[in-house]
Image (cartoon, rainbow, N blue to C red; front, side):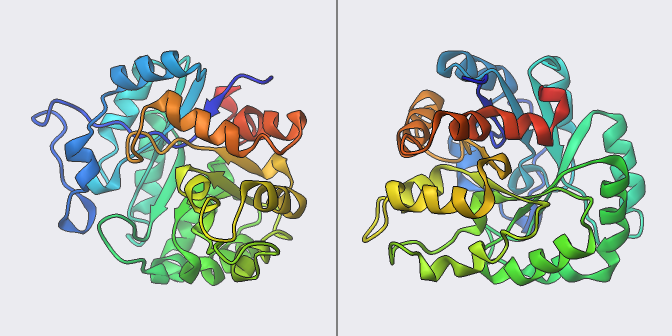
Length: 282
C-alpha cells in the first residue's frame, strides 16, 4: 500500500500575538476555537494514525488571507507537510500576492466561497477579475481547491474549461446530495464534471457520513464515482480537526468506507493522487 497522504487537515496557532485571528467574512469558525490544533499536534496525530505526509489547508475562517501560520508551520516539517493557502483573487495584486506566498513555501491555493460561517456565494468563481490569478496558477503548476456546494458547480465547470492547465480539487466533492441512493440522480451535477480531466475530488468525512443516510451506501456510491472519474482523480482528506474525532478514527472511517474498492484504487485515493497533485509530497 502506498504511504497514506492527507490533503485536508488544518492547523491553528496557540500564539495569537504572532498569528492574530482575522476570519474571512468577520466570523470565526467554532471548530477553530473549540478544537485548535497546532502543527506539532497535527504531526503527533499523523504519527498516531500512520499518515506519512499532508497538504495542510489554511483556515480562512481563522486567518482570512494571512497564510503566515500555515506556511511557517509546514516549513518546520518540510519533509512531511506542504501548505495550501488563500489569496483574494479579485484584487488586482493577486498574482503578486501568490508569487510572494509561493516564495514562502505555498504549494497550492484554495477558494473559500462559503461553508461553516457563511452561505455559499459562487459569484467570485466566474468573476473575470480572478482570471489573472488562475492564469498564474497554470503557469506555476499550483492546484486550486474550491470550497463550494452544488450551487457553484456550473462556475467550476466554466473554470475547468477556461483553465485546463490548472488542477481543480473539489473540496468535499462539492457536497453532493446522495440520500436518494443508486444511481444517485440527485448528484448528477457532480457526475457531469467527469469529462473535465483537470477536476479532482477530495473525499472527506462529510461524504463518508452522507453515504450512511437513507438509501445511500458506500458500496453503491464510491464505485460509481470511481467509474466516472477514476481513482487517479480522487484523494482523501481528513478535515481534521474541523470534523470531530481523532485522526486515527477519521482515517479508519474512510478506509472502511472505501473497502469496497480495489487495492489499486485505494492506493491512489490514500496517497498516489495526492502525490501527483503536490509533487513535494512524493
